[in-house]
Image 1 (tube, rainbow, N blue to C red):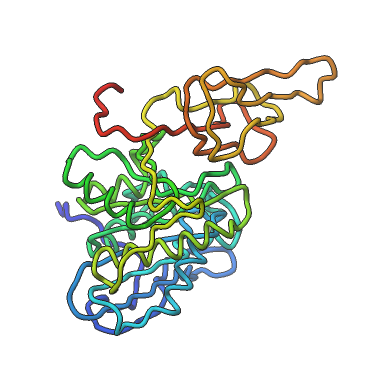
Image 2 (cartoon, rainbow, N blue to C red):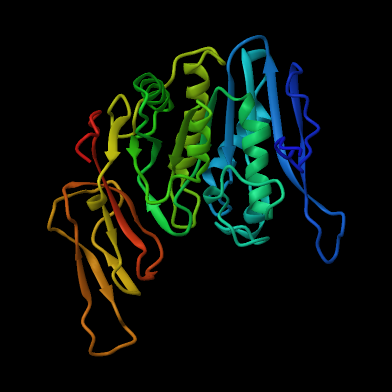
Length: 346
C-alpha cells in the first residue's frame, strides 16, 4: 500500500531557486456551480539574489486584517533584487476568498484557516490551502513573519508576538527578531487554542516564527501599517538580507521594543453572558487587579442591571473587545505583563 504523503493540489509557477524577481499566482482548484474547473489565484512574489536566508512574509491569513497585506504589497512592488542577499517570499493575500469577502473565516467552507494547520490536501478549501503552506512553502523558509491584526473581533496594542519556546536558543533568536522588528511591544504568549495555528506549524519545522497584532476593530490602523512596513524591512536588515541597521525607535521616545508576556489564564477576561459590552480602558492602558474592566448591558430588558466585569490581575491591555455586542464566552480583554523567561510557575 502506498503510504507516501499526498501531494498538494495547488500549483505554483514560481521557480523559487531562480535569481531575480518573479510574481505570479498559486492556483487552488475550486469547483463551483459557475466554473467546474475553476481556480482561486493566490498572489506570490519571490525576490532572490546571491546567498543568504529565506524570509517568508505572509499577510491576509484572515480576510478582515488589512495592515499586513498593505505593508507586504508595498514591499513586493518596491524591493530591488540587487539589494537582496538571500530570498524573500511574499504572500500578501494568503486567504484570498476571505479577503475579498472581508471576513475572518473563509466564505468557501466557513473555516478559520489559522485553526486547521497542517491541513489536508483532500480536505476543504481551507485545509487544502493550509496543507500547501505547510508542505510547499514552509520547507523553503528560515524565518517566517506572519502579519496579523485583531480584525473585527478586537483591538490590539501594536505588537509582535511569539510562543514561549522550550529551546532556549530558538527562543533567543525569535526574541532578537522581534526586537529588530521594532513594534512597541513584543508579546510572548500562550493562547486559548494554539496547536493548529500557522505559528505552531512553523515552529514544528524548526523555523523562526514571528507574528504581529497591528490594530483591529475592522479598520486600517495608520500607525499599524507604518510599523508593519518598517518592521519587515527591519527583520530583513537584522538577518543580513538587506543592508543597514534596524530602526527601532518608538513614537513615545523609547528606543526599543518592550518585551511582555501573556502567561496565565487570569490574563483573560471573558463575557459571562451575551450583551452589549462597555469597556473602561483602551489598548495600551495600564490597569490593576480589581479595577472595573467594563459593564455588560442588557438594553433589551428594561429592568435588568448591567454586569460589572473586573480584571483579575495587574497588567497592560494587549487586546480589547472590538464590537459592542459580545456573546457568552467571548474575550473582552487580554492583559500582558513584563516578560519573565522562567515560565515554570504557570
